[in-house]
Image (tube, rainbow, N blue to C red):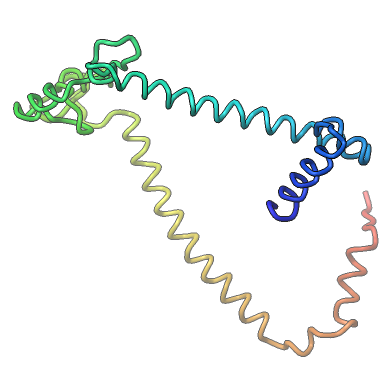
Length: 199
């Protein structure tokens, strides 16, 4: 697309536009009225590209200016833009040293982790709900669905093999009888003629 459309249109816009001093929104409709959309397309692409690059430039300036500060804003968790999961490296090291490095490689305590799913802590490593079952209802559903999917995949795999065998047998058997106009005339006529049904 770049060599077939992008570069020729760009070259035409630059060369003819410079020669007659017109922008793409006016230039292309003067060449041919059907190209008026092409001119506005070029203008809109240039507009969105300029916005995109200005955002990248703004982030570059932001990080460059703040890198001259003695304390970087993103080096601590006291800012308004920090997420609730923000933590200091010292706190993470302390968490790992106290054997609190639990689920999903985070420093949540067991009470906090179990509280996310409305469960209660059972022992040092497991959560449990109030009915003393080890699986939540969502986990039970996922377990059943994965078991059904495994059975379905096995069945589909066997059927696929049988279908491929049937296609192979039918394609190789009596191949010389299938080549000819007379063989295909009946099915073609059946497809082209309307079917009349009695009611």
